[in-house]
Length: 111
Image (cartoon, rainbow, N blue to C red; front, side):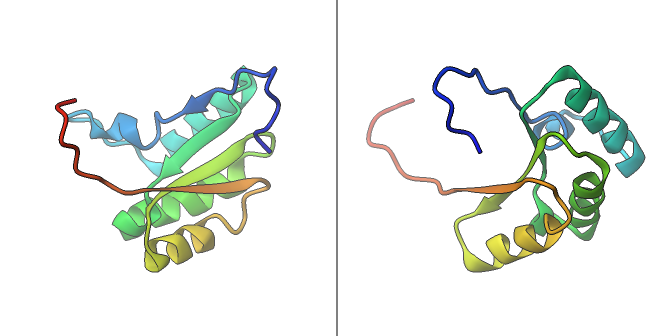
């Protein structure tokens, strides 16, 4: 999957993090068009969304998983079983599914 130390992997978050910009809301067809363009550009991983966040985001991840072939489709999850199960279900059509988890930690040091 992602283990060639001589390759610079490109991990694109446009379809998830890009929608955090005020006023930006992409339709599923728009997301598919962007994903296909990213695939043509040679992006290695596309973060398709956060499937547990809403039914619309779940369906977008499903449709994106079906739409592309030569790119890893990734879903964001929190580190809990329900999130992971929902992401796995949304990614079941992906040729190369990938899920990663995050958790917040407190730091005694300012960032």
